[in-house]
Length: 120
Image 1 (cartoon, rainbow, N blue to C red):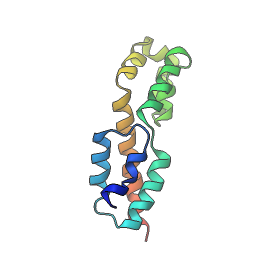
Image 2: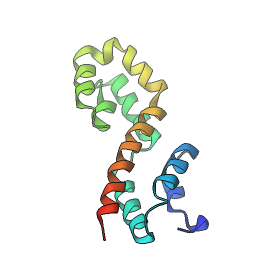
Image 3: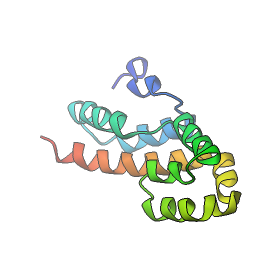
Image 4: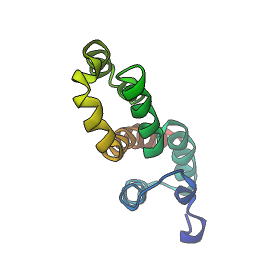
């Protein structure tokens, strides 16, 4: 992929850290595999703004929504039944929403990489 045609720059809320991670992760893929990776990854990825919105919903409404959205069902249930760990866990998640998104996106990149590697 050409630097001027970098499709990752179009992803909502992408950080330099995530961009560098994706470029390094996909460097060994052929061009058609990189396109397939992008197609899969862009569908699974959550932006930090999405996680922030889910966390705010969890703060004012149903605690744990942000954890359910990132596939952390156990933590989501724990937050749900404890009121976001007595609101403290939800406040911590409000502060750390970017790292929660990055952790989730790395998992999705790993899955997407293996799917793209298996294509062709």
